[in-house]
Image 1: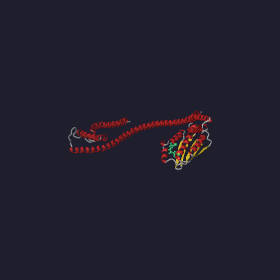
Image 2 (image 1 turned 60 degrees about the horizontal axis):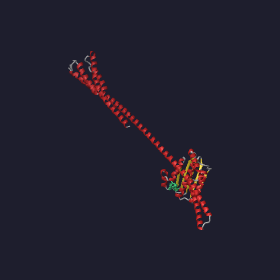
Image 3 (image 1 turned 90 degrees about the vertical axis):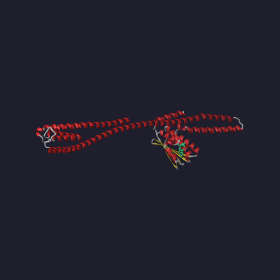
Image 4 (image 1 turned 60 degrees about the vertical axis):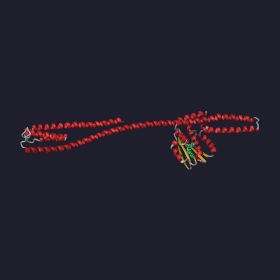
Length: 413
Ligand SMILES: Nc1ncnc2c1ncn2[C@@H]1O[C@H](COP(=O)(O)OP(=O)(O)O)[C@@H](O)[C@H]1O
Ligand SMILES: [Mg+2]
């Protein structure tokens, strides 16, 4: 870009230099023209001598002065004037071929008249020449300015297109990075679900089986004659093992409810909400509209986790004694709404939640899951309570859904 600028200013400098050297050449040739014209005027006057004699000696001289004053300027016109005056004086003013004067008074008056008239002609010619030169100069300057403007325009266009290219490149890079992040978080969420499913099955299958074995052993021990203390201890052990089994079962089902894979969202939610209500003493109303059937597996997980997270939030943060969960499946969209009658999310928390960078882990996870499914999450909160809503289109990513259903089936098998 810099080299371009300097080369264009170099060009302009060359233009100026060229113009000034052309000017000095033109100056010299103007004097040449002036001398040549004066000589020509004298020769032509000489040719007319047989006809005019000594009358009208200055006529051809004036013609020469008009021409030179018009085209060559003051200096050359003065030269022409002097040369023609001297020539006419020498050759055509009697007595001829000498600078002597036969009638000095009349002849000197004639010469002065010639000089005065020549001065007028030169002045007029000069005025004309100057205005012509001025308009020519203006034209040249305008052409030069236009040339410079065009060069600047070209430079600006190049700059603009380079900038646009860079912006495009950066945007493409950014899009790649954002897409990478999106894929990573989708994979993380998937990995989390898989891990929870695996943990749930481990707890249920291995710890659950071991506890069942212990329980059988305790039964065997209890069927033998024991001292009263031993019998009491064995009975307490049986009760404790049962309690541990129940808790392990609940924990496993909360990590990943088997009902979700087997009979679907509605049953899994009913089971979860029953348990939640009992544990938290919060009355939860569940409303599922329409014949729900089965949704894509990743959507069922997303809805279940959303309800789970929101109800946990109601329990932990809202101080509400009631909550409502509504799920509808209408015109190709699943809508989920969890509402409580608590004290609402503090205003500064709401602000940081809406700038999604700062939101809590729970909301961020929900938002991400729902976004993966092409949906959106909305939070409304005031002193009267909080409403969390999600809308997800069904059948947005069939390939994805088929995949995750396959994984889920594998896990359950
Ligand atoms: N139902 C609710 N009522 C009142 N405050 C809430 C409710 N749900 C969420 N919040 C507020 O929003 C914050 C962010 O929630 P969340 O993203 O689930 O993170 P976490 O539960 O881990 O704190 C919570 O810390 C809480 O202050
Ligand atoms: Mg939370």
